[in-house]
Image 1: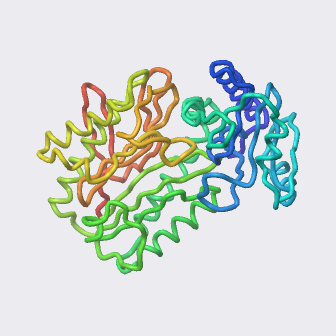
Image 2: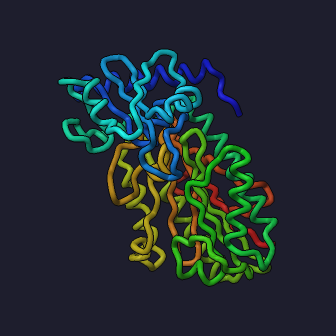
Image 3: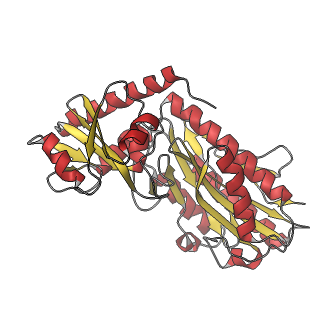
Length: 371
């Protein structure tokens, strides 16, 4: 999917207005965006990264009293401005790669009061304020996330059903990466676990171990800076009753978290629901074994449940991922303007699912595919 230039400009106008309002609220003359997530957000999907996964990139943006300045070293400025910057009006600020860009930045700012998303001496640290400005997706961003969710869902289901016994976890990861990268989706997180490893590793980083029967894949895919998360599991043969029972229970917990992600309410209501559900099935401390997910968007997790509490915004995304030793339920939801929790990822019609009723809300979660 290509994004129409007019939609990009509409998105940029919305974001500039949010920045202007935040500067007024915080009594700042400007904001500086160093982090990849904020650079990508402000540029409607651009990237300042050279090193995959780095928090900061080779370029940064200063918004100062209504003007936009793009900073980059002499060896990067042409590529950045030609390929990553969509602004109609901005000033490129070039510095030698061997010089300190902060000194160049301070020369531009002089005595004005500026906020930053990373600690910089003399700047106001306003990272959390910038986060909140970013959480609510624009309509164009919603369309983008649905596209990313479609690609990730389709490719993951295909890989699961095509994987044979004897395939290594690393080979499975390589196949997924190949399929995604062809569509412009980067795997920000890619976990592949098989058989007994799923009962000992909550984060199964792929190894040379070969699949026997039971496989689980957890993915966070990124395109245009936006992230989608999902987990799918499969079993070659008849699924043991113990694993089947655990999957149903973890889906119940996931559904409770989704139903308790409520527009305008505190985000930790979902975490509290998770703790209650684990207690109700006789495992009150199981939630302590692994983090349960959190908000998602321009980061694989904007914040995790239990770390931070924020008010749920319109068009904010969450990726809850409860685990119950050997099983996991994970997907991406978007809370729309009506308060409906839209599940963005999907499974094909032939994939087994369970429909769970939480206070009248019917929530569908994927089960483990048997074949």
